[in-house]
Image 1 (tube, helix red, strand yellow):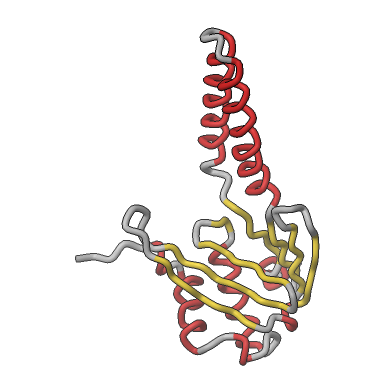
Image 2: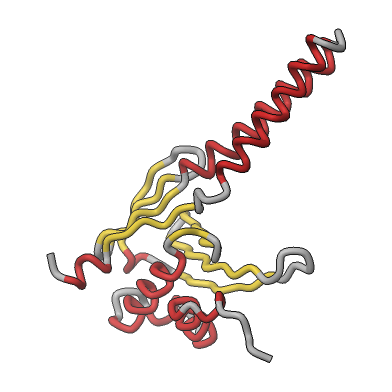
Length: 173
């Protein structure tokens, strides 16, 4: 397999590094719900808390595990959070948008959004494979496989920064 073929086969997904913390929190809240029901004889509160958190916490964990985008050469295959699967070639990408949202608490967040027909995908900088998808999109734009009108000049500049990993480096004073 050539090096170029290897570079065009990868997966972008939510990072699973923090997943253990979500699972531990989920278990702790469920344990508190059981304790409310058993030891304090407050079954209603325990059941309501347990069911509500099971629905919301479980949905959060499952959806972050399910979502991924597989890139194989010029085909992007998506499995959405709702388990819907679809695929489209990169030449069908109509719009690429790069954005930054600031947060006092968490700092800046960087995003790449793709629109292809009725499909829309947004990649966050904390996803595994974010730099690779940025490099992939930039290479495909430069090769003409994605229409040049899909990304503005500033978006191309941002993709270059994302691909180089500049958003992860701390600025020196």
